[in-house]
Length: 325
Image (cartoon, rainbow, N blue to C red):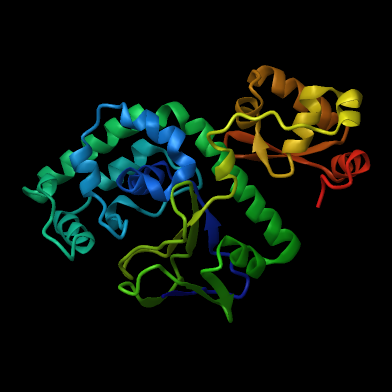
C-alpha cells in the first residue's frame, strides 16, 4: 500500500501529465506478457515484425511486470517530449542505474543484457528504447496521445462537476481518498510506504499500458500515479457506429456517427481513424456541428478535443431514448 499525504486543503499541487517515455517503458509489460493486454494485440502484431533489441528490452521488466524507476521519471511538463525525457535518463548517476535494476531483479540474478558497467548498460538501454520508439511508437503516437488527452479532459470535467474525491475514486477501485490521504493498493505487498506531497506535488499520468494503478518503487521518488486511461478499447479499432435511422436522415451518416461517438472527448485525428474518413472531412463536420451547438470543444496541448453538448445529448435522446445514459 502506498499512501500520499496531499499538502494543502485546495489540492492545488495535483496535476496531470502525458509522458512518451513512460508509455514506452510501461509498454514493455505488454511485450513480456501479451496475454495480459489483449486490447493491444493488433499493435503487438506489428511490434513482432520489428527489428528490435528484444533481449535488452525484456530485461527491463520482471515477472511482476515492474520497471526501473529511473526509466519512469515524473514528467516535467504536461506534454513532455521524448527527447527531453531521454536526456534526463541519460544523466542518471551510475549508482542509481545499478540500484534500480537490482530492485527490479531482486528475486533473480540480473539478465545477461544488463551486464557490464552501469554506463555501458545505460547506453545500451537508451539505444534499445530509441529504436523501439522509432519502429513501434512514432507511427502511432498521435493516435495514442489523443486517447490520453481525452482521459485528462474527462478527469477535469469530473473534478468540476463532482469534486477531487470523485475523480480519484473513478481512477480505480484500488485508489481511495480520505482526510487528504490518497491510498493506492498495489498488486504486490513488497512495496509499502507513506510520504507527503508537500513541496513536490502529485502528478497523475494516464497510460495505455497498465491494468492497475502503479507508483514508483522507491519512496524517495517524487509522488506519481500511473493509471489506466479511459478509451483504450477504441485505440486500435476502426468502427462506424450505427446511429438511429432518423438521425442519419436528418444530419447524414458521418455526422450522426460523430454525434454517437462523442459521448467521451476525442480529437479529430482519433475520430478520423475510427470512422475511416480523412481528418480534413472530419474537421469540416466537427466545425459545422459545433457551430450548430451539438458539440463543445476544449484545447489540450496541441489537440482540440470534442464532446457532445447538452443539445447533442437531447437530440440523440429524442431519436433514440436508449442511446444516452
